[in-house]
Image 1 (tube, one colour):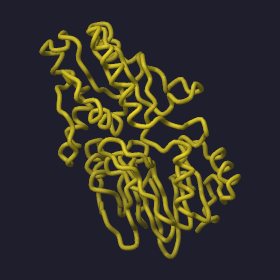
Image 2 (spheres, rainbow, N blue to C red; image 1 turned 90 degrees about the horizontal axis):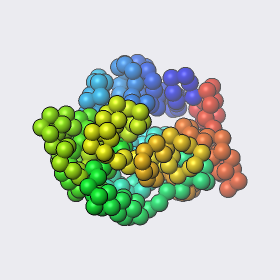
Image 3 (cartoon, helix red, strand yellow; image 1 turned 45 degrees about the horizontal axis):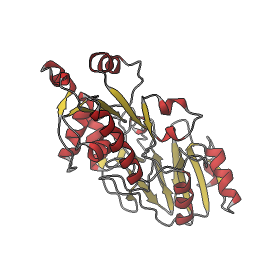
Image 4 (cartoon, helix red, strand yellow; image 1 turned 30 degrees about the vertical axis):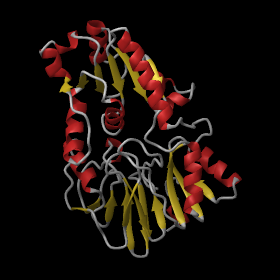
Length: 320
């Protein structure tokens, strides 16, 4: 682990995993197009899916020297967002951000056998066990129905990339359907890339044409604080109620997961039990934990007889 991210030097290969700055000397693997995983500039070969490249371009980063295939490197679906991949090379499996549950158009991530596993553990505490998708759908549909029955418009809040598209597919049958302009733009790219999503009108156009005065309605917007001016306007002008989607809503210790009028437990990551299952299925001889509750999750794995430790800066000698 370096300040630039994870660097693997093995069997003559130099591989940077989700680097902040790409390495001109080797292969740079970009797992997906969330902003915290995109590099700040180009340099060297970038290995990523075509969907990740397209979404990154929409978000302001045009990948140069982008390839989808390199001999002896396998891109494996991680189930996190559209185009998200894990990487298998030289018996090392790097999960990137991963979710092994099916969610709408997203199929659960695939877990290959490996000797060395580098896994995220965003929700690597036992308290994070998420409800099944059908339970979530029932809960949200009943809540929307109740609000609609009172003539109250509803805004569903989820990350602009990933959660917003899942929400659109799961709940886009409610209408009239509107989108925050940024979500509409991201949904349009998903549609271009072959994902079937119900269409709707952007919020700027809807307001301009006075459509939001006709209540109730459904809108899908990025996850944001209720102090955000956009949400303040939607509430004061139209009496809108917000429903936020976050895995952090599972725990009372993390208030930022419950900053909407209603909070629904739904995540694009594995929960604790799924992380444990992922590790066991990989049959890895050595596990390194990154991103999240790294100490706690590694300690739990050791109680199961699995060799595991957090991946820290300058600990590369442990597996190179």
